[in-house]
Amino acid sequence: MTFARRLRAAAMTGALALVAGAGASAQQPRLGVIDFPTSATGDAQREFVTGVLYLHSFEYEKAADAFRRSQALAPRFALAYWGEAMTYTHPVWNEQDTAAARAALRRLAPTRAARLALAPNARERGYLEAVEALYGDGSKPARDTAYSAAMELQAAAYPADREAQLFYALSLLGLNQGERDVPTYMRAGAIADEIFAANPQHPGAAHYVIHAFDDPVHAPLGLRAARAYSTIAPDAAHAQHMTTHIFLALGMWDETVHANEVATVAMRDTSAHRTRDACGHYGEWLQYGYLQQGRPSAASKLLDECRAQAAADGLWGRGSVALMRAVQIVETRSKDSAAIRLRVDTAGLYPFALDLIDYGTGYAAVARGDLATARSALQSMHGRAHVVREGFRGYAEIMERELLAMVQLSSGQRDVAVRTLRRGVAIEDSLPVDFGPPNDVKPPRELLGEMLTQIGQPDLAVPELEHQLARTPRRSLTLLALAQAAAAAGQTGKADAARRELARVWHGAEPSVASTLTAGSARE
Image 1 (cartoon, rainbow, N blue to C red):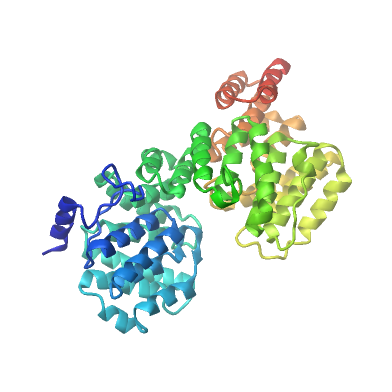
Image 2 (image 1 turned 135 degrees about the horizontal axis):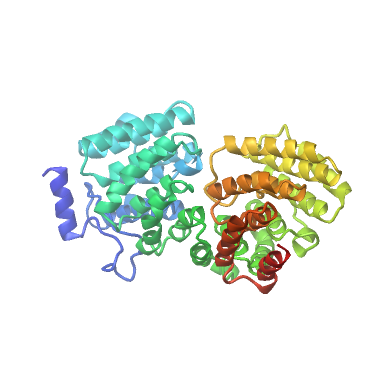
């Protein structure tokens, strides 16, 4: 029987390859629907497909558990070991646990040749050959490239195998070691979108469409997948959050908040009696969404919850506190607040988290005129300039330049401050567009626009702020700054349009925030 016929047979019977969806049993996790027939049968095949479904939604630990259950049921089923090995590489995040993956493969057989010999047909052998390339010899970039080339061959050899097409698309997303390479991302997105059109319940297709298009320019191409993914895989917390990669890129704050509220609850630690997981990626995005909505009290409550959880969560929890504290200070333009007074345990924190602490402290200090504290924070940041920041060096330099420019402006050095900040803008322009909240907390072009308005050059501020809105659509502080700059420059139409858009963003804002818009309109 040809592979294409096997696909049709599996789709008809459903016994081998369907997991989740409307017909799933109460015990089956709702993760989407895929066709992935293999040489395995019965429970071993069902556990294998469950693992692949979890794998497509980046629920890696649950995927590995499912693959190991499949191995226990069919110890010589090679693809079950392939699947577990695949859980140890995270292409979009540029993470790879090579030792764990090699150990999983060795449990199948001690050598590459012995493992390949256990594949019962050419198609399954192709998957094994690809994963052997992924975890073979050489540097990670070289192995990632070899793996992608192997998956390209697999996809070409089996054009009816949607899993081969999608794992090839995912390999493309990881080729640039976690950084966005737009042409390659577009290739991956086109592959995933074609599969999504053919199977609108495929979690991997929807997921990879979103990852390929989650920047402000291409985000509209991912909106259909974003609206669908959370319902395709409701039992995958990552699927709930992932939709917001598109929503945030389009400034859809209500949708961003709702999805991350669901995700933080889905990730809660019931053993610790948490109602939601306030720290981590989902909590950080939720806080940012609250602040864009004009709900600082909700954001502050989330920060307090994260701080309370951080003691148990360790370094990553305290890293979240550092980031969320800085975001709370900047987005609320705080001079003195609970966030400023919040103390973070810095023991063992990675350098960029320390930068965030200093930046938040310095930003608030400048706002209240305490330049001594601001300079101290700036000196602390500068002292880490030589330290590797795991991919955040550019953003750390931007924040340092922003803080320096704010100190310079407060010291009366207007022209010097603008030059300092323009260098920060140039650095950000050289970096890939963020796929989430700004890594530098305060976009330098937004700060430049505010500064130019402050020194009496609002006509120069307006284009800078318009440029920023193209990079961060419907960001509330940018809209507010644009309304003020345009009004000061006599560009009434632009001021009114920015104010109307901000009013829509802040439709549910807390009274103290909403009054900012009213007061600004009255002053103008």
